[in-house]
Length: 146
Image (cartoon, rainbow, N blue to C red; front, top):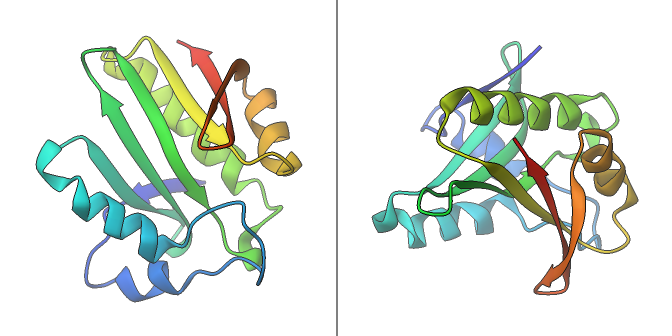
């Protein structure tokens, strides 16, 4: 079972050290993502966190909320190679959907994926996300109404 934890001094090095295969361009590095979170820190609506399986960090996720639009954006999801194809991504996104619905703050979720990332597309469609027909910086936008 997965759960989410804040990124702290205790897990920072492991989270930043998570890597995708050389040359893959489906997701930004966790260091870049944390720099983006720091850049937008004053808005108070960007949330990076570690994804854990029991006591082991297995991935990274970053959310961005727009309370005015009642939208939660799954901005980034990243699992290093050694933790792929174990169901962690499906579990993590499913848990975010559950938490977003229970919060009562959101009407829908949005996320994007890079064309060619068929694993991500499959997971998102399996969980009910549908393409909106929009693209953001060349990425395909998907939406799930709560």
